[in-house]
Image (cartoon, rainbow, N blue to C red; front, top):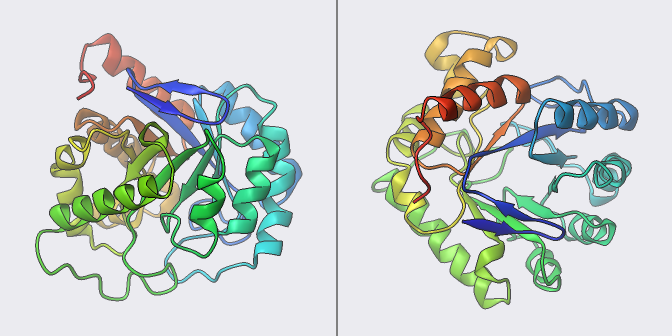
Length: 280
């Protein structure tokens, strides 16, 4: 399996690690440590040196209860970092939902649009469909970041609902002119879901994998891991790596993580031991 992106056809015969770069003042995971462009650029370089296969740069915090920046604020945060990141020799993703940011990023040569709202905002789908090669990650989210964790509820089986929703959205995006080989799917761990929903999505992740698209999963430092272990966000390294490995074991092609070096090392051990499954 491959994922077609702007500059790269990403080989997914082995699991890939996407390193997170939050260019926000209110990130749940790193407290705005990389909110200025200079520190974010240095962090990009560090993650590549640690073995990140993809960089994911975002200027909007999507933690529960977060406010939403304007497109102009988001552009001011991410553009200098994206401009630097595309020179580092790895695929670059921008984590955004705003059409203006999507278009500006694509104009810089960014490879992937990673949208927690699955191109549902005005102009977003049109901006992506107007590009002939960029990769896209469609994510499931119930509600909006400001309210999504208020009372997540699914009428039936959460795994079936999330899988069916992503399949339908994928069909809609393809109908707008985005080729299938450009699309990856993300079940949206922690985005409008209880811990029980999240564990069900992990346990039965194969249902999403069998749709035949690259599957991208982000468990890194999530509150569900804190609930399970009793550890604060900065103490969830072991749990995050374990969740990433479990996701890969169940067929995930890309894991989105904060702790790149530890995840890369863990995957190397699994690969050497023959524990990484063959892609479905």
